[in-house]
Structure formats: C-alpha cells, structure tokens
Length: 574
Image (cartoon, rainbow, N blue to C red; front, side):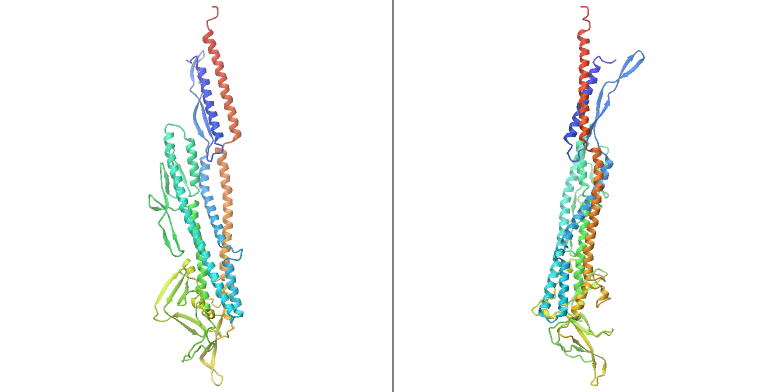
C-alpha cells in the first residue's frame, strides 16, 4: 500500500535527478574547450513502481526517477580509426620535414651548391683545353677542384649531421613515449579501482584516451579494453601497455658504421631485451628518413668514386708539361732513355694508389703499392694516341681497401704532387701521339713506333676530361668500363638525384595533405559524438532547470495538500 507521503518522495527524486543533470550540463559547458573531453549525460531511469489496490485489482503506480549512470559520449570506432590514421599522418609529416631539410642542403638557387661547383670545374677544364700551357689556367683547375671537393665534403657532412639529428630526435621522442605509456598504465590502475564500485570514471577515461591519441603519433597501435576497464596497447606484436604495467623503449648501444661515419642505433624493448620494429608513425618515419639520408651520402660517394676512378683513368692517359717534349719510347727491341713529361698520374687521391670500381659490391677498391709502374702501349684500334697502363710494381707491397659512402668522400683529394709548388705542370692536358718509325729510305718499320707528347699548348686530353661532365659513357673515350654513376654523364647523375629529391618531396607533400584531410574528417566524426555543443547544452540547461522548478512546484502543492489533510481534517463542526 502506498504511503501517504509517497508523492513527496516522487518529487524529491525528480528534483535530485534534475539537479544532477543540471550539474552534469554545467560540467560539460565548463569543459567545452578541454582537449580530449567527452560530453557527459545522466542516464535517467524510472524507479520501481509500487502496487496499488483498486476496485479493478492491483495496479502499479510510479515512484519517480533515478540516475542510473553518468555516461560519456564516445565513438570507439572513430577512436580506433583516428589512432590508426594519426600514425600515418605523423609518418608523412616527419618525412616531409626531413625532405625540407635535405632540400636546403642540396639547394643551389644561389649558385653555391655542388652543381655550381661541378659547372665551375668543368669550365676550368674547358678553359685549359684552349690554353693548356698557361699557368693561370692550370692553377684555376686546381682551385676549382679544391672548391668542388670542399663542397662535396661539406654537403655530405651536413647530411651526416641531419642523420645524427634524427637519432637525437628519436631518443627524445622515445622518452616522451615512455612517459605517455607510464601515464596510461597509471590511469588504467586508477580507472579499475574507481569503477570497481560500479561508477564510471569518465574524466579519467578521457585523460587516458587523450594520452593514447598522443601515443598514436609515434607508433601504430591496437587498443584492447579488458573487462575491468584497463587498456592493453599492442604495436606490431609487442605489448607496450598491459594493465597497470608499461614497457620501456630505448635506443640500443651505438653501432659504429664506418661507411657513413656515424653511429647507428636500434630501438629496443628494455625489459625484454629485444628489438622493436615499428610499422608506422614517427619512429618508423625517423628510421626511414635515416635510411634515405644514407642514400644521399651513397650518391655523393658515387660522385667521389667517379673522380677517383673514371676521371683518374682518363687523366692518366695524358701528359703534363713538366719535362722536355722528347720522344718518350720507341717500340723496338731496345728502349730509349726517357726524361720527358710525366704521364699516368692520378689527379685525385694518392699517387701510389690504384682506384677501381667494383660494381658487384658497389665500392671502390683502393690498392696502395710501395711503387707504381707506368707503361705505354700502342692501341690495336689504329688510333694515333698511346694507351697508358698503371700497375703496381711486381713484388711491391700492396694494401687493398674497399671504400664506399663517406669513406670515398673523405678520400677525395687532389694528388699532392699536383698541389706542390709547380705541380700544376703535372696536369695532363695533352695527349701522347703514336708515330710509326721509318727507315732511312722512308719505309715504315713493322712494329716499330715512337710516342711523343703533343705540343705544350695541346689541350686534347683536357677536352676528353671535360666531356666526362656532360656526355654519356658512349660519347667518351672509355665505353666499356663499369662506372660508379652508370652510363649517364656526371651532371645527369647529379641532376637526376636532385630532381628525384624534389619529386619525392612534392609527392610526400601531397600525401601529407591528403592525410591531413582524412584526419580532419575523422576528427569531425569524433567531435560530432563526443564534442560539447553549446546550443544543445543550453537547451538542456533550460530543460533541467524547468524540470527542477516543476518538481519543486509539484512538491509544494503536495505539501499544501498534506498540510490540509493533517492539520485541518476533523476540525469541521467543532
């Protein structure tokens, strides 16, 4: 049987529930600008009805309203989509940032880059070809070669610095990530404790999801919620957060990499002592940009290798102007004495080292001898220019070294013989001409030849050397030897590298923009569910305020009725 005061309890429940709803609305409005906040609402439910006896039997009368729970508006599918795509967005952003820095390193708009120095070196050889006996022209070749070497080495060093900076960023980001994962583990514990009594820890859950948003920048994440409300966060098969515990990611001990002149590092899981291989996000992007930056050092190393091998090989075929222009050698059974100009010299590198390109290992093999033998031969193709062969003296000690990348760039220098005083006269600008010997009667002597350098002003070999800059291999003197830059010209090789850099950068910029648009759509999708809408909250505020007032007014009316019943019943007729 219903109590006489049952109506009062019904209105009190309405007042309390509307008050709670109004408080929750105020909480929403107060946190409208809070990052990661999810709109909350009171889940109202009717209380258990009471049985009432009537002339028609038993009936159920309502007893009011109660707050079943305070729920947060959250779309878990939108969250998972955001966590997945946010790592891709971060990946593209980090790659694009690296491209911007690398483009700055290789920028030549102010005519001070490697391409400009290559052009200056090429022009110096062109000038020398038309005035090979002029000392200033020879000095200019050395000066421009030094400038080119300095620019190549400076550019490579800047790329090295960029790689080291990437590793520094990776170390810093790992510390940030570890801090986030530990905070998520702590929130997991607090959420489980709070919700063990049945309440929903909405604000703590918002904080945790906000941290997961930040974590998704660094790695690809899969998030699984346990029955007790804790998150398990897994990336590429590795559990980074499990309940109230978190794994620590750190860099491995430095791994010396002499090819690039740096120390490499891997990402490791400290507690398990295993390598961690991210598939997406900032960590993966940093690893990929480091690997890509190394390819730029490789390509600059190939340019250095070109000068140490192909350029040197052609320079060896010419002669300097440091001696007399007497006949060098007669190809008879008796060799003549020789005190003429030098030939067979390296322009770049060490004088007693023979540099050769090994395409199978993409490296230059440098064989250093205690002494070098330089010999001449008459070509079988009927040309009038002698061929120079440079080899280690039989029995001479040899040291063979394989070089690539930064090792080649560091080894690139001008032969010290050429940079010595008057060494510019050793620059091999002219060629060695072959003439067949004749008898006293003027008849040609079979297999008897003489080799003589062209006049001091000859610049034929300088022309050949300058052709290396702009002609494909098929247009040069050596059409068969494998080269470090392939069959294209030196300028084409370098320009194709920078063109690809620009193309890749533009392509990455397009991917980043498309990913930004996708993230914006997902963010709007999440906001449409979890975001605080001012119009909706103000409408709710008025609704709950009116509900509170209505319940209060009804309570007052009931109170007046009961007052009449209690205080006035039975007073009639007294």
